[in-house]
Every structure is written in structure tokens, then in C-alpha cells.
Image 1 (cartoon, one colour):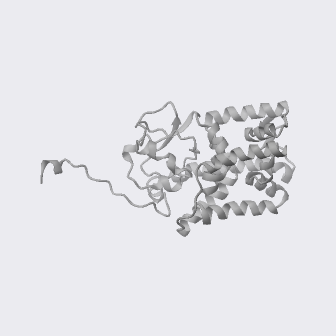
Image 2 (cartoon, one colour; image 1 turned 180 degrees about the vertical axis):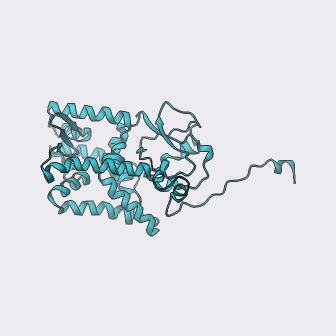
Image 3 (cartoon, rainbow, N blue to C red; image 1 turned 135 degrees about the horizontal axis):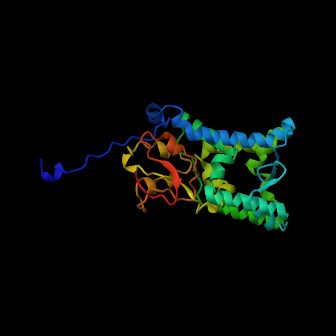
Amino acid sequence: MSAAAGTERPMRSRRPAIERPGHEAVATKGWLRAHKWLLMRRLSQALILAAFLAGPWLGLWIVKGNLSSSLTLDFLPLTDPYLLLQSIAAGQWPYREALLGAGIVLAFYLLAGGRVYCSWVCPMNIVTDAAAWLRRRLGLKGGKVPSAHTRYWLLGLTLIAAAATGSLAWEWVNPVSMLHRGLIFGFGLSWGIVLAVFLYDLLIASRGWCGHVCPMGAFYGLLGSRSLLRVSAGRRTECNDCMDCFAVCPEPQVIRPALKAAGQSHPLILDKDCTNCGRCIDVCSKNVFRLTTRIDRSES
């Protein structure tokens, strides 16, 4: 054997992404720790929905309104900045309370990350996650995924539609609004739109709605592009190339630059499309990932 051959580094074994990612993490960390971030997200989504539904269902008005515009405990206004932008485009100047509410929401997502809305607040996330889970379990492959730029085109078109019609045109078909209305008033057309998104993600395009179509996701991604909270692949040298993180990530393209030092030297995931969902942290048996800040570029 030559000296050169003796100094070669052994290649890591690679295996394809498994249909049930995270089984190594469950074996290593236990079921609860391997689902910690997922459970916290579901709790967040459930509590937010419960706060909105407690009024019409139980007469307990913790929050009045919906995810687009609300008043919490009769004093805290919260307004979706994307809705505010549509309103202005439609020529409807908002009330002072709406401007204040949008400012509060903007400040939060500038800190936490805009796509945090998609993974921790939006109830449609439960629908699209269910479609992704079922797609993996059924072993469905392929499909026709639209360009990643599609959602930005749709974002622009919703504002043009608002200006052309003088109304919040997107809200008539927004699946988030439809799901909320359906839970309060019963499912009709709302049920059909939510089901259409589920079937689209299941049968046509993996992670198609949230990752390629939804204009709200595009808006919140732009909003949180410089946010403070970030996921870091700080222990990337421990990666065993199991690909579980890529399998569960709703935006898998954001992982590679940080994990494999592709185009950057530091381990931070800085892509605006990262949702800070924490699933990569959950399913990694080597504890490669952690939630930190954009200031922390260390590896440990």
C-alpha cells in the first residue's frame, strides 16, 4: 500500500433519506426529546386557535377578530402587516389601532424571524405537515413543483388585485382565513379550499403550498430576512449524512450552506425561508443543530 493511500480519509457512508426520519434520534434521545420542537409548535398553534375560538364557541372573548386583525384582552391590537399592505394598496387607509397593531407584529417578526409565523402560528401548517407526513408514509415520489419564485409573483399579484378591485381580494381565497371561518361557521367552500391545499401537497407537489405558492409565506420571509433568531449547525463535524434533517425540513434548500459549508464558512442558517421550526434539531441523533442568534457563529 502506498503512503498516499495510507493517508486517505475514509469516506462516510451515505444512505438515502428514509421514509420515517428521526428513528435514530428517538433511539438516542428518547421520543419526547426527538419531538420537542414539534410538540411546542403544535401547542403554540393550538393555544392561538383556542384563544380565537373561545369567544364564538364559549363566549369567553380573550381575543376578538382573527389572525388578520384582532384585539387581545380589549387593549392589545394586533394586525397582519401583509393585510395592512393590501388595505393600503386598495386605497383603504387603516385606523390608528391597525397601524399600531401592525407595528407590534412587525417588531416581533423582525426579531424572531418572519417565517416563524408559518411554523408556529399559521393553522395551515398543520394541514401541510400532515400532507408531508402522509406522503412519506405512502412513499409518494416526484410531482410537479412550481418555481420557488412563484410565491413572490403571487405576492405582487395580490397587491395588484387589491389596487385594481379596491378590496382585499386575496382574503376571499386565503386558506388561512378560510380555515378560521370554517372552524367558526362550519365548513362549506372553506372546507374545499383547505382540502385542495392538502391534496395538492400530497399528490402533486411535496411541500408545494408553503414552499412555493403561498404569498403570505413570501411576505413573511422578506420581513424576517434579517431577524435575530437563527438555527445553527454548530456541531456539523458530527454529521453522519443520515439526511433526516433534509427529509423533515419544509425548506430543505436552506440547510446545505450551513451544514456543508457550501458558499459560507459559518454554520448559521441565514436563508430568509428558514421557518425556525426546529424539526432539524428534533430529528438529528448527533445534536448537530441548535437555536441561537445570528451573532453566534461558533462551532461546538
